[in-house]
Length: 412
Image (cartoon, rainbow, N blue to C red; front, side):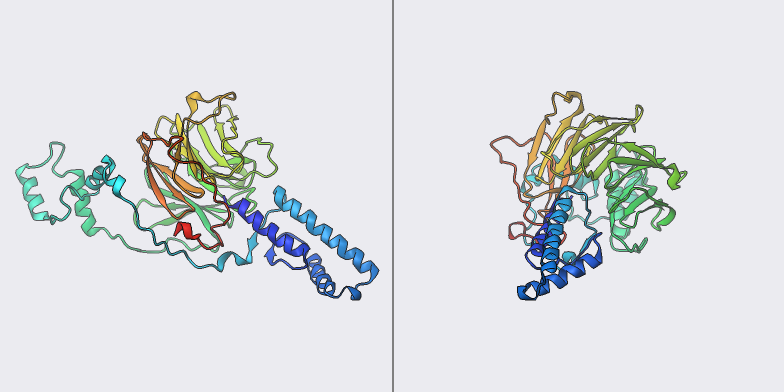
């Protein structure tokens, strides 16, 4: 989830350090060591000022820089902050959405009808006429008002603008999820706190707060169980963590070991199956599945060639088919009924993004999913039309990091 780009950026700084320049970032490194490096590099400009013992010390400091570079590359050192991360402008996207294919698909008409637009959006919504028709019994057979008519009325009265600030956090909030009934909302942030809100009405109210354990850099993702009684969260750890909403004490957090054998595992995305018996997660070493009744990891396929898998989820309620999106910009479809240790191939690919996938969500009907990407685009996909070998190739654009680099011209 951008961690590889962050490491590369820091490694470039380490090259500058070895060449006589000092890096400017926050890391878990002895400050005295960095100060000493600065002093030696200043004196390095005039080698005649260096005493023999200082030449040896300078060599040792350069060796230290090389060792530090190796630790960052391996993941043993986590970069907490980089001072240049917030200096770039917000991107101005010049491309306009392409809706030609969307308008030819049946989901376009269905969505318009369900949102109250109907077949004639220009026709004014007369509440007097609708009430008169209801009184006369003129209307659909299943009730006085159709669902689209109710939506059309609500569109006129419900606010669609910023109303109120629910909560102010001092650290970044990376994820938030609603329960299935929408009555509770949970957030996870970089301050190691998980907050649960009452979202049953428009005035959100904070109910509980839990301090997560084994957080490392940040809480990366969170998801409610189908019954809404517990939730799972992930961090930069080789495990999943489950907590009950009835008891949010740290001592009651259940740890599910993934046993990935990786030097530094970060689980970027996690979700429950509809039955609540399985967990699906995407990490920097592929996809993992966990069986809750048996308490074991059931599958760990090397799915995306050791690239970050940033998004996973199930296509429908059956939980048999799931999707994954990686930093390669490719969405893959998988069928659990066809997968085993000897056959780890997906059943299809969706190719169209020109940079890493950041999020995917399903319409839960087995036909449509929507994806978001670092290429600054959102795409709606029809799962009945998979990409073929002739339709395109996997694109690899990983020469920029969306957290601090300007958006490439190809994405604007």
